[in-house]
Every structure is written in C-alpha cells, then in structure tokens.
Length: 615
Ligand code: ADP
Ligand code: MG
Image 1: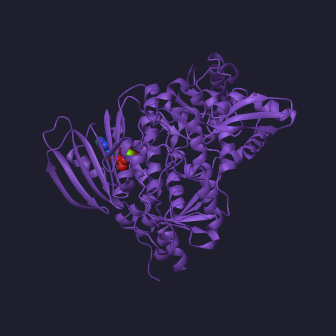
Image 2: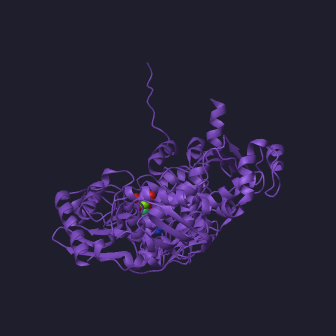
Image 3: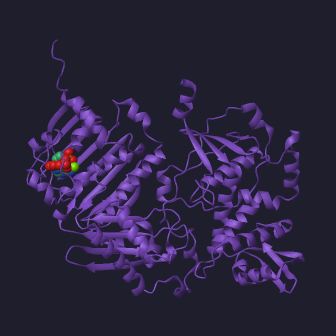
C-alpha cells in the first residue's frame, strides 16, 4: 500500500492553530494590545468597527519592526521574545509563542505598517488568509499599526458562531479593561465606530481604576500594600458595602498580566467574611509581583490561568493582607453610617462609570403583522377588540398610574458605552407584538427579542424608584383624605423603623397609633388603591431581608415596589404601551435582568431562527 501521510500545508496548519488562539474578536484585541506593550509603546489606540468583526486596529508608538522582521512576524513560531526553552522560566514579556500574528493572518485580511525609530521609511504588508498580497516601503509613523479586517472571512462556520455585536463588544471591552488596568503608565484609547469610548491618560493604578469605572469609585477604594520575600501585593479592594451582586469588578494581575484564579479569589472572599451582604461579591483590583521564575504561564493557551510555586503561602498572605486593610481602614460596615445614600444603590445617575448592559436597536423595518398591529390602536383611541377592554378602561380612568409608569423618564443620558452599543432606540408604531398576554416580541437588528412583560416592567420600575429615591427630590402627592391602615404591632414598628426612608420616596405619615398608621401623602408613582398592597408587600420583603443596619433599605424598597406595581402576566398591552415598555427597558442600566435576578428578555438571532427551519 502506498504512503498516505502528508504534511499539512502551512496555511492549513495556521488555520488550525488559529482556532486555539483566536476564538473571537476579543482574542485578537488581546494579542495585538499585548504585542504593543511588549514593543514598549507608551500610547496605544484601539479602533473597532462592527464589534471587531469588521475591523480591529491597534496603533502603537513602540519600537516597530525592521523590514525583514515585519515579514517574519507572520510566520508561525516566529518570536523575538524567547530564544530557548530556558527563557520560558524567566518571561518578562506577554507574548512568547510567536503564534498570534500567524494565526490572525490565516483567518483575516491583515494590514501591517511599521517603522523603527531610527529609520526614514517603514514597511507595509498586506496578508489575506496567510497569503502575502503586497509588501512595500512606505512612509509611516514610528511604531506599528496592525489592522485586522473581516475576521474569519474564510471560515464561515466560525464567523457564524460569533455572538451579537453587543456580546462581542462586551468581550472586547473586558480585554481592553484588563490590559489597561494592568498598565496604568501607558495611555490607552478605544474608539468604536468612530466614537471615543475610552481615553485613558498615563497615570497610576488608582487613577486608572477611577478613570475607567467613574469618579465615585475613588472613595470606595481601600489600598493594599504588602511586601514579603516571595510576593509583593499592591492594589485596592472596595469597601464591603460596595460589593456587587454580579462578579464584575474582580481583577488579579500577576506581574502586570491579568489572571483568573478561583483559589486566590477564595482567599479574598474569606478575608471579607462576615462583612458582605449575602449573595454579593467583593470588588477588587489586586496586583501581585512575583519573581518570573516562580510562576508558570505556559499551562493555558490563552494564558489567563497561571501556576504559582507557593500557592498556599500566597493564599495566606493575600487573605491576611486584605483583612489587615479592612481593619486598618475601619471599613466594617457598621462603623460607616454617615455616608451618602446614593452610594448604597447600584443606581448611579451622575457618573458614566458603571458599565451599563448592552442595549438593542429596534429594527424599524420589521412589521410582521402590519394590518393587525399597527392599526389596532393608537394610544388615544377607544379599544377595538373586546379582550383588551378591561385593561384599557382601567387605564383611561387612571392615566396617572399606568401612563406614568410607562412614560416617565428613566435616565436618557447616553454614556459613551451606550453609544458603543448603538443604543438609539428607533421603535416605531407596530414593531412589537404581544404573545399570550405575557410576552412581547420585538424585532431587532440581529433578529428578534422576546420580552417578559412583567419582569421587564419590574426592572423599569426598580430603576425608576432608585433614581427617584437617591438622585431626585422625592415627589409626593397629597391625599385629599388621609388613609388609615390597620397593622400588627410588629408591622407598625417595622414601618416606623424605615419611616424616613419611606418619606424619601414620597410617603407622608400623619400619625402612628397602636392600631396602625395614617398616611397623608404617597409617591406619585403609586395610586391610592395600591397603597395597602404596596406596604404589605414591602413588609413581607423586609421580613425576609437579613437585618443589617449599614445597608440602606432603599434597595429592598425599590425591589418591593417594583414587584407590587409591575404589570402582571395576563394584562393586555396596547401597542403603544408595549413599545414604551420595550423602550424603557432598554434605557435601563441593566435591562437584562429583573431586580430579583431573573432574565427579562431573550434574543433570538437570525441564525437561531434560521436553524429552526433548516433542521
Ligand atoms: P509573540 O508575541 O508571541 O512573540 P506574535 O505573533 O504576537 O508572537 O508576534 C510575533 C513577533 O512580531 C513578536 O515577537 C515581535 O517581535 C513582533 N511584533 C508583533 N507585534 C509587534 C508590535 N506591535 N511592535 C513591534 N513588534 C511586534
Ligand atoms: Mg504576541
């Protein structure tokens, strides 16, 4: 029998290798940013188009490459960073595998321009799917610019596998943040579709954190500083009361490289023990310096997990350091009573700091039920179909309640990040459709979105309440006839205990007696008939809450109010109301979950819809 084994051609081998290095646009971003840092750049600019699917370009002012090196840099296993295996044990650079550029060039259109400082002219190279299209001498700035276009253009399966622009952008931002936090001395900018998203000046780590996560972050940070023979620990933890429900802001860096470590995360959590509200996670930015030969970065292809020689010792040192700082800065929550109530809530109108969850564009061209939907109702019209009449007549009688719930302004301030996600909503009449009086279907750019009306409305109301409570003056409506509500002694005490918090939402209490309370004013967002329901629900929710004096009741109240007042499943919504709900939901800071953490919507990409029919 004849021989059958062949060596794979380079471009095939590169495509296969690329699969490991490049999972998504964010992987390219990481590799290019790291190369720029390894080239000693002091200024790095990242340009994105279409969530990196169309363009990822990194421009640096680093040392550049010679003509020959520029060509060689795209060969597999071509690296200037290690010479022999021994160097692996003393790595000072991010890269060392010499695979990134070869992999990227195998699956995209790449344009490199580079020039060394002492040279008159630089080099420009174009590569498409590992094939060199051109190599020229050009005049260009000192440093390197690498543009990666049409990622996965030659591997449709991979390209189709990419998630929505919103998700891919989020991954890119994560990488960008990690790299920028690890290198505060380097100035970084990020542009998406020509909008500036970040412009981070050269600074120190504290300032870098603050410029990334917003001015309010500064007062939350408690420094760490510990030096031992085997490790130096620097960085910041956020005071326990600023811990997050989501695990978002947790960063470990080892020798200026972002790493993940559940083991070390455990050490931090352990140090916070007893100080955190249940279900929350501490925020931290912790920088370790260790001798390069005491770690092994080689164990993971994407290099976010590393192995330490002295893991157990590190655990103990880290835990002690965090505990020490918590103690030293007196941040046990009980001692920290007089702080700004704004900071207690996840809602923070005045800063663009926290990353708002990506938004969705409503596709103005979608109209599957044109005749049925668009013409059924305009807001002011009398109901035409009988099954909507109950709800609508309620609505008419009481425009102050439902209407205000839908139309009152949730923050419309667009942050740079929101622009990034192209948040501008373009809902027009007839772009939504209600299903089973429970869900709203709406068309979006990438396909469709299915929204749970009640959970979505909870989210809208929750943020609205928090905004009202913490940012604006509470608005109150005076009742013509004060209402007395009978309550048990414990309930009366409970209400009395949170009287001032309730007042800041707009409640006015005329009298507390043995039998109950008399209420003279209520928040504008509640109607008279809802008062008892709202208070009863609140009492129930308060009883379930772990008593903790340092935490404001605002969050519990906002959640509770949102729960009581949200439209329920089974309620028919007019088209206009559906649209308002959709718009208000996606103007929220965190549209994707209800205040109690349930998903508010699910997107169905066109591909997902297509696969339903192509099975
Ligand atoms: P690695 O970073 O592992 O060495 P890469 O494929 O990422 O592998 O890069 C290959 C080589 O190309 C690097 O070792 C470096 O010499 C050169 N290079 C890549 N990007 C840059 C850059 N931005 N500036 C200067 N040299 C670069
Ligand atoms: Mg590299």
